[in-house]
Figure (cartoon, rainbow, N blue to C red):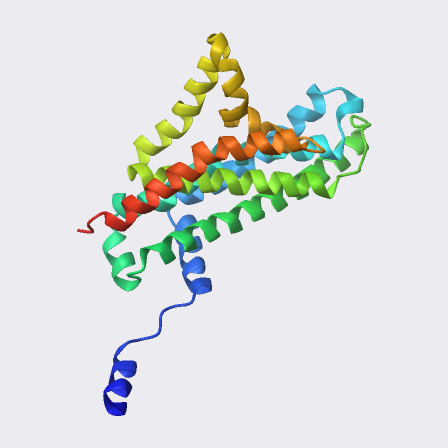
Length: 258
């Protein structure tokens, strides 16, 4: 029995640690032409919006906190697409066979993709912070900015949370639809349609305040999120994040790899 156990142990290589899987998935996110383009666009959006804000906003409103919020516009728009592509590229680029042969536990691959997206979200928030500090300094030197230099840590924390939520929503939609164009279109279309219906139909205005992520997540960019706003955020994310994530994980586990 000891000899059999020894042979079995030698014939079964150890599973790669989650940290290594995360590093691999992170590299896959930034190692493609589409991934690199999205990374550049997110950074360029933050840089390009700074002069616009400096010359368009009133002097007293040009605080570091406001500039930091402006720097995250590109993150809010494009980082979900990066999350979608991190999943759908396995099928569109036909790398799923290699990925799931090397790592049969598909749930571990999913966790690694989510952790990789969280790492990128943190990097973009940090980059936005640097850009906003430089923008505030430039505004002060040019005499354009008269706002405060203070930046509440809570605002940085909620902004990071928003970026993490958005990339996780992208991963969820990517798993659910597993087709890049379809997942990207539906990610932007479905919440927009819900927002439009909430504005047009009087009976939907109340539910829209609880289920419309365009409204609920907006509060994360403000200072001092209230308990009611947290409740609305949790309710909307249960519909637009939790349900697609669970259904997508089930589909990922069952889909045949060819």
